[in-house]
Length: 130
Image 1 (tube, rainbow, N blue to C red):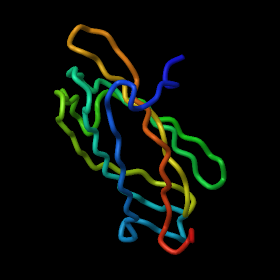
Image 2 (spheres, helix red, strand yellow; image 1 turned 60 degrees about the vertical axis):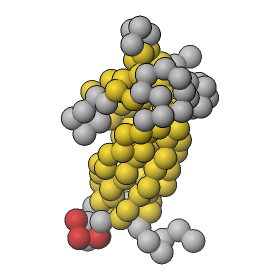
Image 3 (tube, rainbow, N blue to C red; image 1 turned 90 degrees about the vertical axis):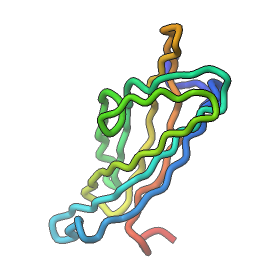
Image 4 (tube, rainbow, N blue to C red; image 1 turned 120 degrees about the vertical axis):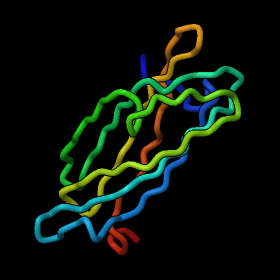
C-alpha cells in the first residue's frame, strides 16, 4: 500500500523545523501562520527526483486539509546519494495548534517510483503546548 513504507527503507531522511509567524497571524481572525523548513537527505545509493508532495494538515478542531502538488516550492530536485535539499514553506491554521504529515513521491532514474513518508510534526503557537 503506498505511503506505508518505512521512511528509511529507500534511504531518505526527512527533518523538520517549525516557526510561528506572529507578524503574519491574527488571533482575532483565528489565523495562525507557521513556516516550516524541511531537509530531505538521500542516504541511499540511488539518485531519485522529488516529483510531487502530499500533505495532511489537521488543526485542533480536527479540520483536515489535504494538499497535493508537483514538487516543492516550484522545484523538483534530483537528490544523488549523500545529497540534501532544504526548503521553507508555510501554512495557516484556524487554531493555535495542529499537525502536519504526508509523503513525497520520488522517481528513480530508471523510472520506478516510491513514496517517502514525512513524519508527523506539530505546529504550535509558543507557550500553548508545554
